[in-house]
Image (cartoon, rainbow, N blue to C red; front, side, top):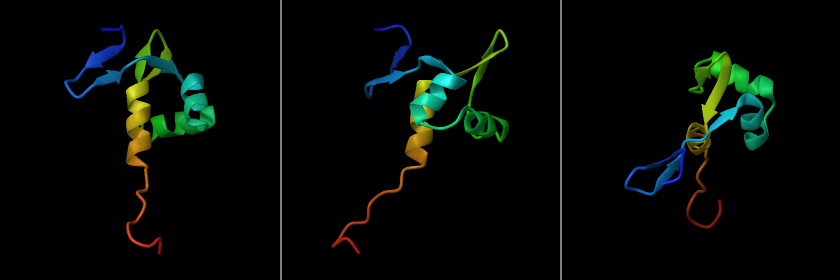
Length: 76
């Protein structure tokens, strides 16, 4: 198993830690938006040596929570 990946039985979850800058680039958001989400307790993070780090899997979950599903039927 690769370092930073956890085998959950349902596949692997990527738990690489990303800086706020990397997270903002990954989500195509400003770093200020990431910090705002952290400050509003809307985004889990880890603090290591004064540096804010975010798991990639946490970012993926945030995206999933914000996903709007398409309606079935004829497109109306």
